Image: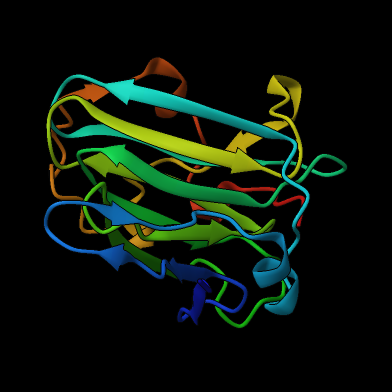
Length: 185
């Protein structure tokens, strides 16, 4: 079995397609294979995996990144439910600075999104009781957390919930807009 890596519109961002075997009765795949990641030029040294679960439909999280020297690759997948996943380029000098890519990830399709350092990541749940799993190349460190305001009009993100999330944590209301971001990347 081999994973297939699809480059997305923002340089470095990849969608990971599983090689699924089986039928309607039973399916099997690998979410991670070090040799496949290395062959694609991606890190294969994940040091932390965690999950989060959100009860309300249209829960919005993000847009987050972790600052150097603990910047991290983040591999995202959905274990239950479905999300509208959004990634924004916050690399100074990048030709795609401030641009974003959106993809839908769901538990049924087993797709994964690889978010490298220099990108802000967020999502909106598309089903109640959605569970999201994150594999990281650096452990989360709260003191190095950074972010962008999820609904900054300058980003032009079309969130499925519009301006009315079902749940929005206080931490996600205090990030700066892109034009005020002092990007560490």
